Image (cartoon, rainbow, N blue to C red; front, side):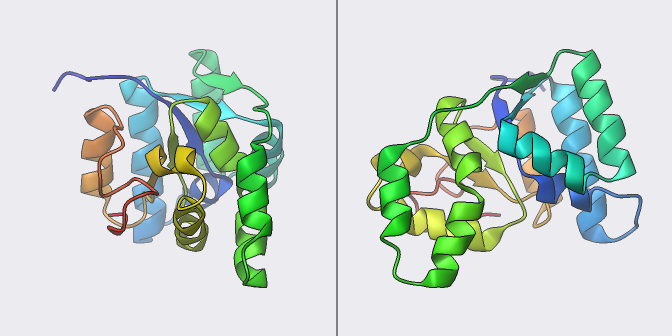
Length: 178
C-alpha cells in the first residue's frame, strides 16, 4: 500500500516506556507502532521537554528504536513556541486534576501544533482534557491523538494511510480514540 503522506509525529514518552520486551498486549502494540513509524518513514518531533522524558522513560527497545530513527535522520529536535490561548484555556480548567494532566502534556500539543498535528500517547486522560480545551482553542480541534495500546491494527493502518486527522482521532470530535 502506498503511503499517502509522511507526518512529523509527536510521540509521548508513555509509548516509549510501554514498548518493552514484555508479551503484554500494550507492550506489543507500542513496539509495533514504533516499528511502523520507522518503516513508513514518518518522523518524530522531539521538543526539549520530550527529550528529557524520553531519556528518563525509555525501554531498551525504544532506545534502539531512537538510535535507528536518529541514524536515518528521522528525529527532529524542535522547541515550539508556547501557545498563549492554550495555556490560558488550561489555566481556566476548574478541576485541579485536569489542570495537572493538561499542564504535564502541554509540550505534546504545542509540538503537534508546530508540526503536523499528530500526537501518539497512552494518556487518555490528557486526551480527554485537551478535547475539552479544544472547545476554547480552535487550533486544537485539528490535532489527531492516537493511542497505540487500544487497537493496534487500526492504529497501524492509520499510520500506513498517512496518519491523517480523521474524525475518530481529532481532539475536536466527540468520538473516542480507537
